[in-house]
Length: 113
Picture (tube, rainbow, N blue to C red):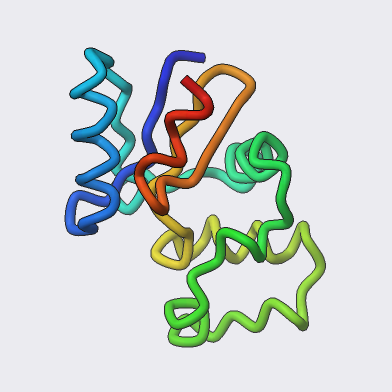
C-alpha cells in the first residue's frame, strides 16, 4: 500500500502532518475520511498496524457527542461505531506499508517513513 494520510483538512495537526510529508518530498495518497469514511475492516486493519486498542484513537469529546461509550463496547463494536461516525477518529493517521502512526504531534509520522 502506498503512503496514505487519513486527513481532515479542517484540522491544524492534519494539515501540519501533510505539509511535513510534502516537505520530505513525499506525495501521499490523501484520504479525506470524513468525505470517504473507512469501513470497519479498513479501520480494524489500521488499528492493528498502530498496535493500539481502538479506544486509543477515539476522540473522547466527539465520541460523547455521538453517544459512543467506549467502556460499554467491545473492540469490534467500537470499531464499527467509529466507522459509522468517522468524526470520532483521531487525526491524522499515516499508513506506510505495514506501519502506521498518528500525527499528534506531526513528527510522530517520521518514525514510519
